[in-house]
Length: 57
Image 1 (cartoon, helix red, strand yellow):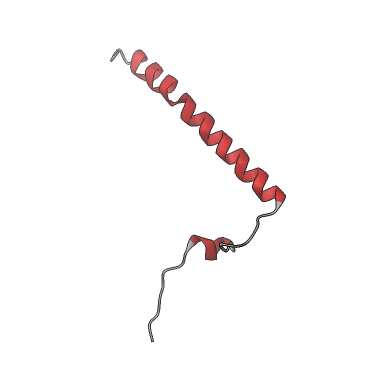
Image 2 (cartoon, rainbow, N blue to C red):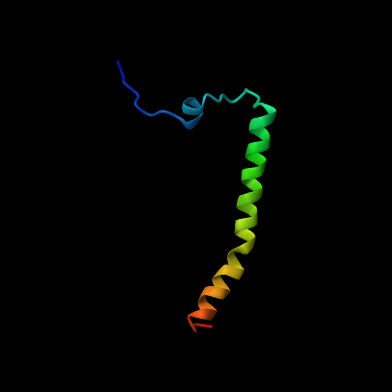
């Protein structure tokens, strides 16, 4: 008998490939994605400000 100790993230969070998420979960995921996109959009500004203040530009 083989003991497979690997567990997928879907099993941990209770999601399966065919399951539909609830409306509240979908909205939370969309909000998280928008926050991440906003952070990525600010990265050039943050980087240029940092290096500018350090005198490296």
